[in-house]
Length: 269
Image (cartoon, rainbow, N blue to C red; front, side):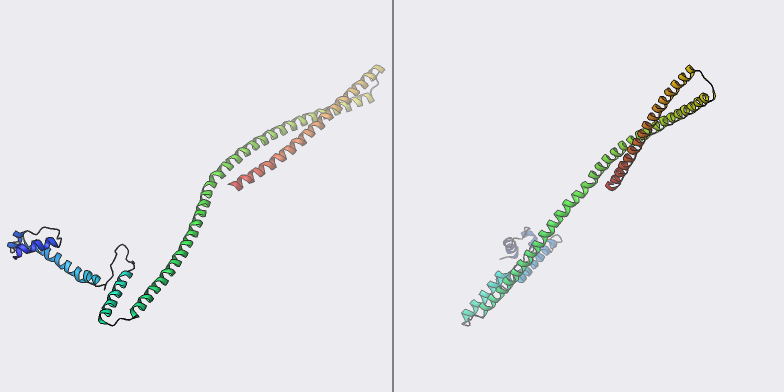
């Protein structure tokens, strides 16, 4: 038939994506026609090259199928088809033997051994990855604990700060009480000294002067009274000294407690 009639139907059977107009083929020399015709020729060249390089070799079992998504895919089916094709040709020519079968068995045994080795390697790799995953999980748990540790230490440090401030306030009150007791002790010691001086003065007066019996009795009574006062003052002084000693002991214990708290706070920080 005519070219303008045959070419559009051929391109439709070849599934050309664009409709080839009959009018374009009738006016080939037109400037608007050449770009479309050159595109048709280029598409046909690509189609012929694909047919020669891939379609016919694959149909003849001379080339394996290529999977772009899995380039390492096994093309063992094509090896099997090619071997069957060659065995059938030898069978038709009367030259059939077991060499190809042995060769095919050897090929597949080697592949099975390789696949088993790969399976073992992948299993070992999987076990190693599982172990690493367990280690990573343990490290993550440890990391979470370490991340929580500063907050816990901060709470503990705050508690120790409060305890330290309370201990410092108790020590300050103890120091104030100690100072007050020492002041009272000094006053009582001064009173004792004054009373002792007064008693010595009175004793001297009694020894150097002549008194009547009533005066002597009165002086004895005053001496007895002063002795009792002196005894009471001494007892008060001893009590004050005991209080001062107890306060000093409390101050020492509290100072030791403060030092322990300070060491605990420093260790926690």
